[in-house]
Length: 300
Ligand code: 13P
Ligand code: SF4
Image (tube, rainbow, N blue to C red; front, side, top):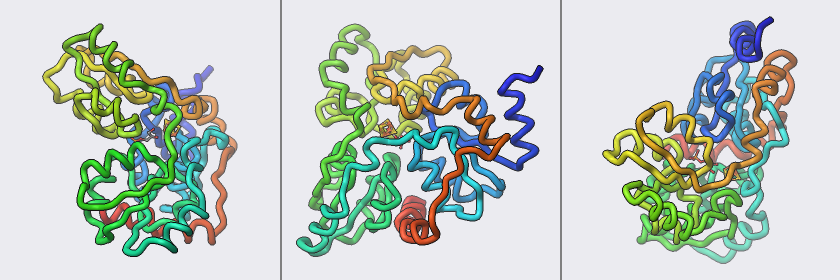
């Protein structure tokens, strides 16, 4: 009898489908994917693919962004309830008030956000392109939604602009404390601490390198260090160990349970039955597309 991984290989061919997976989903799902990467890489792949069906293994805003960027494709998700809590942490009222009160303002929206928030924003960013994009904007004032931690990281790199925040945060990264990093450093004195910018400022200050998941992986690969404290969701350890089999990794961040809702059985069900389709109205997609496309242009 065929196992689920073999069934997925056969179904992908039969349905002209491609499977995309974020570094945070379970190891076996990353293994079954055609493309594994960070949010920016996956958004670009989704926008460009010629495949008829995209199975997106991640959280809801990722499937939604794929559908908005490539609306003629069918986008399926192994579990439509896998949601990013931070995606909802800004409001239409906050944005409207800031726009009414502040001249020369750009609303910059982290891709970890609902389609509604994207439609109210001037440009989207991911953790790997936020600094470059914000620096390139002509506006002096920036309302950065919804992640205040990524926002404050960008503000440190772009001191010539004024920043305002909506006060959102990632509940997975925000629980890591500077003391967690410092005690891991005491236990592993030669380890470098690699940190996602969704972590709080004190954690970032205690770290040796700050970057997106893809940037953390690339840094670990080229660094001369042999050991690393990993301050991002531990799903990245699968790719870190694959690329750096002789190096050691010590995770300090808890798992994102929504990302773990992606299973091999769920991927097979998408492919077999067309289950988990991301459905959006034309109006909703058209409204959110401009800010996502502007991100792809400015990040190029
Ligand atoms: P990346 O931009 O590194 O993919 O991060 C996405 C994310 O959800 C981090 O929590
Ligand atoms: Fe959202 Fe945080 Fe999970 Fe990333 S790790 S998907 S930001 S809840």
